[in-house]
Image (cartoon, rainbow, N blue to C red; front, top):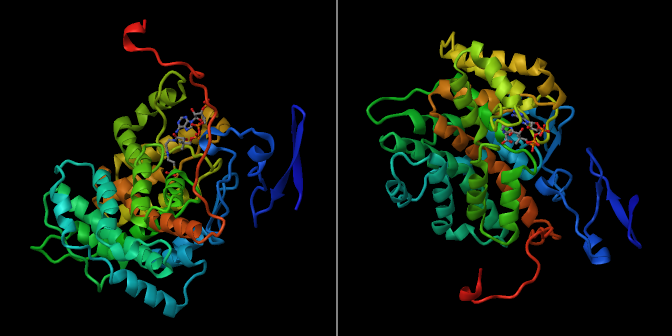
Length: 428
Ligand code: CMC
């Protein structure tokens, strides 16, 4: 193992350098504080690897995304979402027999406890569905006591299956509740994504026929969102889990983090932005706003902490958007026109080129989901549904790592130094 040395004041320390399979090396600073009494400082963790992981690899400069070594393009083209879940959880693609068993297990855990329905009734009809999801997923830990013992491998496995299986049911209930329609129960003869579409869009008075092109497109969107290494919500899940919290509570924490517009909330924000721009001729005004340092406006769906190249998921998403619009006979979607034009202009603009700001996965996903009939408030919920497997795979990897310990960052304290209490009457 190679090492690097760090010298300051009169101290010198050799820091081991670790190699991954691919990607940048890391300098192991875990002994730094003990040996020297100083911390490292890296707000936003731009230069920090928080863990070892075998799950997902991103090369942001080249625009590469691999799940367990497989390129996202191949999985999106040839695989399906549940197979991808198996891959993320177990490390390899399933054999036909393993896949059948996994699909069977997930399919037979899709119902939620009937008392969960009462949770929904407690919300206002105009509650954001992400608020409902944070609450209901957290509440799962109050229903499934037989899968909250994290030291029991079987219970961990059952919790994973339950979470993947029940997220579509809860997400569909959140949507149905918001529009005042009755909940639609899962149907085991349907595949995972078709079942979800049916639970969202079927009504008891009519037969619902799943459109296989839309189902395939949504399944692909789920594959694209399934994992993305140590992003904000995944790191939240790991941090929550590092204290020994149960997996349902950890995933609820991940959902809360995903909600923000800089993360999963960007798909909702991107569509709102496209609607606000309205027409291609308004684009220059918004580009100027995005470039103005004194204006907080950002082009939503543009830029990424890791990708300094075209987000590989955005390419697939763009193709999927076209497929869905063609299938639905939407020839002229003004939002798509604005999106295509905006992308073209931004990709040539010096500001965006210099800062390496490319469209990310959220740029086209909103257009696609809207065309399918989902309201904007559901976009981030769909992201959460798909990312659940990534969160749970990362949580499982952490729990099963013998060197795992509670995550506890330190700080650079810049507050008041020690001072003495003064009684209220003596304060000026
Ligand atoms: N529009 C205009 N300027 C931007 C944008 C944007 N979308 N994104 C970054 N910049 C500028 C930013 O002002 C800064 O400029 P300067 O160096 O002059 O101060 C520079 O680019 C670097 O930005 P940063 O905020 O330091 O970069 P970051 O890595 O901390 O942020 C980001 C990454 C995704 C939060 C940011 O690009 C952003 O806010 N994008 C819009 C929201 C979005 O689309 N998020 C979805 C991310 S992909 C899905 C997911 O993983 O959840």
